[in-house]
Structure formats: C-alpha cells, structure tokens
Amino acid sequence: MKALFTLAFCTVVSGKALLDRNLAYRSPFHDHPQFAHDTNEIHARHVQHSRRQVQDAAGFDDDHYPTFYGGDFSNSPFVWNGGLNFTHSVASGDPFDTSVLLWTRAVPASVADGSSPVPDQSVPVCVSWKIFRSASLSGRPIDTGEAFTSYDVDFTVKVEATGLQPDTKYWYLFADCTNPSSTSPTGVTRTLSDPDTPAHEVNRGKNLTLAVFSCSQYQQGYFNAYGFAAHNTTADVFIHLGDYIYESLGNGAKIGRHVLGRELATIFDYRQRLNQYRTDESLLFAHQMAPWITVWVSERSRAMHTVNHVVNSAALQDDHEVADNSWKAGTADSNDTTIGCSFSPSGACFTDRKLAAVRAYHEWMPIRQVDADDKLRIWRNFQIGKLLDLTMLDTRQYDRDLTDVYYNTECTQLMYCLCIFLDDEENWFMESLTQSKARGAVWRVVGQQIVFTQLNESGAFDLDAWDGYRGNRQRVLDHLKQGKIDNTIIVSGDSHANWASDLAHPNDTTTYNAATGEGGLGVEFAGTAVTSGSPYGTGILPEAANNISRVLVDVNYDLQWSELSYRGFFTLTINPSTLTATYYAMNNISFPNLDGFASAVFVVENGANKITRPVAGGKVNAGVLKSSVVDQAT
Ligand SMILES: *[C@@H]1O[C@H](CO)[C@@H](O)[C@H](O)[C@H]1NC(C)=O
Ligand SMILES: *[C@@H]1O[C@H](CO)[C@@H](O)[C@H](O)[C@H]1NC(C)=O
Ligand SMILES: *[C@@H]1O[C@H](CO)[C@@H](O)[C@H](O)[C@H]1NC(C)=O
Ligand SMILES: *[C@@H]1O[C@H](CO)[C@@H](O)[C@H](O)[C@H]1NC(C)=O
Ligand SMILES: *[C@@H]1O[C@H](CO)[C@@H](O)[C@H](O)[C@H]1NC(C)=O
Ligand SMILES: *[C@@H]1O[C@H](CO)[C@@H](O)[C@H](O)[C@H]1NC(C)=O
Ligand SMILES: *[C@@H]1O[C@H](CO)[C@@H](O)[C@H](O)[C@H]1NC(C)=O
Ligand SMILES: *[C@@H]1O[C@H](CO)[C@@H](O)[C@H](O)[C@H]1NC(C)=O
Image 1 (cartoon, rainbow, N blue to C red):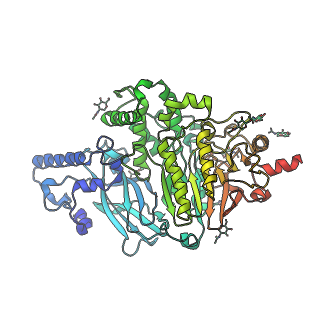
Image 2: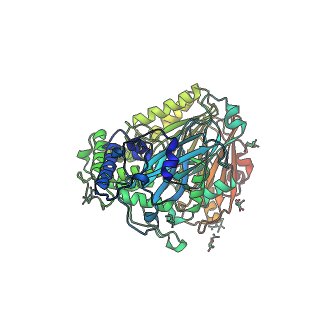
C-alpha cells in the first residue's frame, strides 16, 4: 500500500497525463507524433498490457496496483515497483524567473545492475519530485508532482518546477512513487531575476557569475574543469557552448577513459555516449550543484559535413523537405536495435543521425523545447533582469548543416556570403540585440560556439569559424555600430584555445585603435576546451605554446591575449558597472583532481565597449598579452 500512501493527496490523473508531465517524451518536440513520442500510443500500450495481465491473473489482488487513476481500474496500468536506481544523479537547467527544469534518470534496479533484462516494456516507472527553499528539505515543498518514464525515453525524467520565486536558490530531489524512501541525490538550483528587475537588484544585488565551457571530449581527459567551477568558484549558472559529447571513439584507455560503443549513428549510440559521459564525477557534481544553459552539441555536425556532401543534392532542394524527410525517416524507423544507416528509406544517413542525436540530447539534457513548430531550433534568449540578456545562438546546428549543402563551396571560395545561419536566425539575433537595448538591459552576452574575431593563424583562417562567414560577421558589427548598441560581449567555444579581443571590423585600423581600445564595438571572450586538445598539439607545453601566441597577438590586430596550452573554462562576473572575465587553467586532466589556477582576468566597464587598459592589468599567469609583445618590440 506504499504507493497508495504517497499518492493519496494527488488529484486523479490519467496515465497519459503522467507521461505528458515528463518532458522527455517531447523529445525533441511534442504535439508532433511523427517527430516525438505519441504519449497516447504509449499510454494505450500500458493499458492494453494491464488488461492482459488482469485477464491472465489468478487469485488477483489489486493491492499493489496504485489507484491514482481513480477507481477505474480498467484504465490503470501497472507501475514498476521492483526498485529504482537513480543512475545519473540529478540535473537542472534553463532557469527562468519562476520556473526551472529538473532532470533525473530512474532505471528499474534489475536493469541498472544488469541482473535481468529490461522489464516488460509496457510497465511505466513512476517518480515523484519535490523542490524546497531549504537545504534540509524542511517545510512545505514549493512545487511537487509525479511523472512516468519508460524505456521509450531511456528512463530519463524531465519536469518543469513552477510557481517559484525569482532570484532564489532551491533544493530538489526525486523519489520512487512506490517507495518514497528510495530517493535521488539532492540537487541545488536557482531561478533568475524577473526581466523587469532593476540592474542593481539582480541576484539580490550581488554579482551574477556565469561559468562558460566548451569541448569536453571524454577520451582526452577528466572533466576537472566542471568540478573546479562547482567546487572552487561561485558560479551561479553553467553555460555550455557545444561539443558536450563527441561522436568519435579515440584512444582514452591509457588514462582510464575508454569510450564505449562506436562512432555514433543510432539513438542507442547517442544514449550510450551521453550515459557514459555523465559518469564523470566532476560533470555529475556540476550538474547537481547548478542549473545549466546549453547550446547544441556540435562536433557531430562537422563529421556530418562529410556525410552531407555525399547526399544527393537533388533531394535537398527544399529545406523544409529535407527537415521533414529527416524527421520522418528517423521517427518511422529509428529504434533501439537498429544498426547503422541501412534503415534509412532515403539513404540520407545524416538525417537519421541528426534525429537520433537531437532526441537523445533532449532526453539527457535539462534543456527546454523552444518552439515545437521550429524544427531544430534551440537558439533562445534569457532576460536576466535589466542587468543582461543572455542570448544563446546555435551557429552550428540550426540549419547550418543544410546551408552547407547549398552554399558551402561558394562560401569557402568567395568567403563573403550569408550562410552561418539562415535569415530566420540572423533576423532574430539582430532583433534580440535591438530589443535588448530598447528594454534597457545593461549587458548583452551572446553565447555561441565559434570564434568571432578574425584570426590569422600562420596565414590560415578557420573557415569553420566566423572567418568563413564574413558577411554575417560584418552585418553583426554594422548592426552594433549603427544601432549604437553598447556592452555586447560575445562568448565563444570550439577553438580549444583562449582568446580575448575587442570587437572591431576586421582590418579596421582607422576607427579602431588596438592599443587604447578606442572605437571598439564590444568584446569577445573565447574559451579553451574542458579537455579537447590544443589546435597547436595535444599536450603542448606552455613555453612552446607561448612562442606561438607571441606571433599571433602580433599579427592579429584585434587580438589582445592568446593562450594555447591549458584546458579549462572561464567565468563572467557581472554587475551593472563591470563585467569581469576570469580564465581558469587546469593543471593536469589525466586524472581526476581540482588543481587549477586563474590564468588571466579581464575587466570591461559599462559603456566602454573594449577591454579595460592595461589589458588584464598588464599581467597574466599563462599565455601572452599583445601589450607585452608590443612593449618588447618598442
Ligand atoms: C545503480 O546504477 C549505477 C550506475 O549505472 C551502478 O553503478 C550501480 O551498481 C547501480 N546500483 C544498483 C543497486 O543497482
Ligand atoms: C563583484 O565582482 C567584482 C569583479 O570580480 C569584484 O571586484 C567585486 O568585489 C565583487 N563584489 C562582490 C560584492 O563580491
Ligand atoms: C578546490 O576545492 C577543493 C574542495 O573544496 C579543494 O580541496 C581544492 O584544494 C580547491 N582547489 C584549489 C586550487 O583551490
Ligand atoms: C528495429 O529495427 C530493426 C532493423 O531495421 C528491424 O528489424 C526491427 O523490426 C525494428 N523494430 C521495431 C520495433 O520497429
Ligand atoms: C598571416 O600571418 C602570417 C604570419 O603568421 C603573415 O605572414 C601573413 O602575412 C598574414 N596574412 C594575412 C592575410 O594577414
Ligand atoms: C584583412 O586583411 C587581410 C590581409 O590583407 C585579408 O587577407 C583579409 O581578407 C582581410 N579581412 C577582411 C575581412 O577583409
Ligand atoms: C621559444 O622561443 C625561444 C626564443 O626564440 C626559444 O629559445 C625556445 O627554445 C622556444 N621554446 C620552445 C619550446 O619552442
Ligand atoms: C599528470 O598526471 C599524470 C598522472 O599522475 C602524470 O603521469 C603526468 O606526468 C602529469 N602531467 C603533467 C603535465 O604534470
């Protein structure tokens, strides 16, 4: 009767409603059964199963059937009551002012410990959740509920806690509906300010700190950067700019980071990879201790480019059709046992992989579905009081792989065309910047994957970065200048190295002065990888790296700091008068540890649109400042 006890206060809800409360079933989108899960169908499967069981049961006793479907037993499925394992702790994400997403994974114990095969797939798992104002979980929960999960969504659970207070810290946990004493670890999360909160009152008047990460490849090292940020900084929100997982296998065995499975293709592969990444203790801890805001995994798309180009271009005349095809192909045929691309009716393997990747990502990440009608969209905006707008762009995945198919050859030859994102997202981005200024937000922090500033690396430009999309970059800079939009801070990942630059039109040495920063249009802070290797050689030591950095800061007019050796992350500490970027370097990622140091600190003053001089106070603990090279030369 335990189950009855827990659920005694619930209003009567249907099994379908309990499925719908788990947002993982909307992965990637709900209300589109052809794209996501049809919860009506899953519910019908459960009901059918329970009917079958009832007919077959001898000496039937309904005590162990939860009755929260009301008295109508004919309509109530079994609920798994053989014990749950919360295999991957908890996570939270996409905080708003009064709500936040909570995540866990609840696997039937017999599956998790490998003692038996998957239980009957028609049996839903029921978890309850509660969120509190106090670390001791005392007092009335602020919000609470139950939801179903099942093998259909890899036993992931994603619910939205609502009715919360802005700018407030919360503690939450999940439990087995049929055995409330079986709980997940307790997670810590928070809400953000109401959009209208005056800038100086945001975060209750204290600095707001964002920790920014990118490029975490499991086989290349331990995710110490996440642990360091969670243990050793006061980060309020964790931002991930992409390459959260990698599809490749690599050779991590020598440091105990052997990657399971194979190059990712099916839903099974993506789930297994996310599952394995989320065994890293630093990553688990970081997810448990703070809400995350992420943009799309991107390494995949690079590998897909190759695949893209072999896809018959005649089949790709219309992007809607491509997208529709991709979803249909994936949904109609993807299943946990399918191997490879042979199941794809179109033969366009990448579209099936994309569906699998997006679906698994939305199952495993505490990310909101932005717009059910907008196929792959995850770009979105967080208005954090009047202090800042955090705009997350999806410069890699959203439409871009499609655009590559149409325009890529032309782009790389002409190097001047629209193709980093389609009009849709570009217009939305420009409008976000304008709106942000109009609503009086002090700072505009733009989180996106790829390096924005022109970088001449020994004569080569990374055409996978904004250097390959110069028309877009020019329009963004023009927009900032013409619209007199101040205080734009672009934060970037992808490059596996650290860069700090003022924003200026490339090669503009007349209206912008690199020595003083005068004429700057904002600032870019680009961060190194959590683990992925330096572009100048995995494991390159600081001395050799600095020799290269010296050339780079000399050759590149806008570049103020280059650091190529360390893996790590950076934080942005934000208040109405200053935005401070602190870069952290991890000393050794070949074993789990929290050994790191601050390598450089940059300040941006409200209204200045440049890094404060002397840059980094004239002194860094790693990498090379332009000022040091220029000083030496003069
Ligand atoms: C729970 O899951 C974890 C991770 O898969 C596993 O290591 C552990 O053995 C499981 N525990 C039980 C009791 O099944
Ligand atoms: C806010 O951050 C700035 C920059 O890091 C720092 O100088 C200041 O002391 C911080 N203020 C508080 C109250 O922590
Ligand atoms: C980070 O925090 C951990 C745990 O509190 C501590 O043991 C470690 O020494 C700290 N690391 C540094 C570099 O301060
Ligand atoms: C899953 O895919 C395999 C391989 O294509 C196929 O044989 C099997 O029928 C599919 N199963 C379901 C339930 O669709
Ligand atoms: C790029 O940098 C190299 C030095 O590494 C320099 O020789 C070359 O002229 C630069 N190219 C451009 C286009 O600025
Ligand atoms: C900047 O100047 C270099 C060297 O002349 C050139 O290669 C590059 O294309 C210029 N960049 C832009 C955006 O015009
Ligand atoms: C770095 O440059 C200095 C000066 O040119 C040179 O003496 C040194 O050997 C270089 N170090 C490495 C590791 O390349
Ligand atoms: C990192 O730690 C490993 C394991 O202790 C050690 O073998 C290696 O030398 C260390 N690397 C560096 C750069 O200190």
